[in-house]
Image (cartoon, rainbow, N blue to C red; front, top):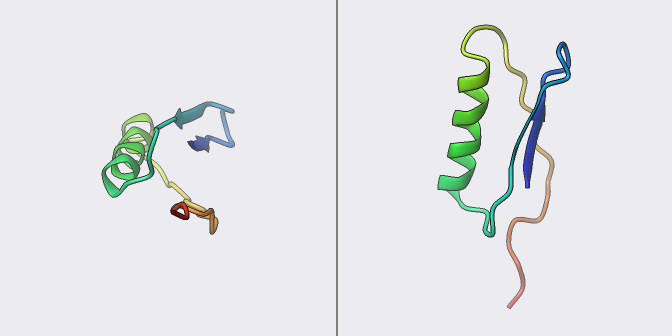
Length: 54
């Protein structure tokens, strides 16, 4: 799950996917840019585990 919040308006954008891939993350970033085409965007990424053990 990816999520972002506009701290000024409280609007939340989220995306739930089965797998974490570059394409999924890119779509999430595109969602953020579409919702805020003008203005500053601050992105904070954590070290969430993105792979699973086999």
